[in-house]
Image (cartoon, rainbow, N blue to C red; front, side):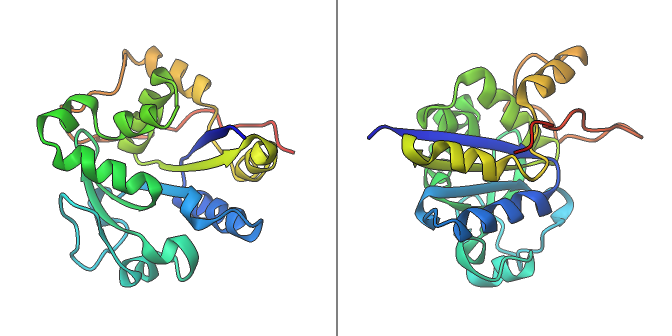
Length: 201
């Protein structure tokens, strides 16, 4: 049976973390779920473990509110063009490879390369990478076709972002694609995030 990659962006880490919990409760294996969330300004304490590799551990997970399952193993990572993140799951190994791959990792933007290799279209992956750069959280699930609708339904319950609307919003600001060499993102005063999905189940 064919395997699909389903990805959703969330402006709030709490929504992304709840989605991970909901997926686990529905029986989706931890090994098929990943989460990557921006850690700008050390908003998620990781006990000083941030670095260029995937430094995971239960202590870091507990500090940012993940006491069990996938979130218990969340740890720190630095991604080109995004900066510090906390992450857990199968995507972390591909991210760590991209980050430690030097020029090759930087050229693909790290996260974009990992997403596109997993089957996410490049334009969509650019929006997700930019969304994480601007403070968002990304949940990615590998599943077979038989469970795809159920997984999407669970992921869309928690204020997931409509990536096409977010793409239009970014482009209206002059953005074209994720830039791994861009400086750290600073939100403009009073800036909002834009549309979230409204097609709830």
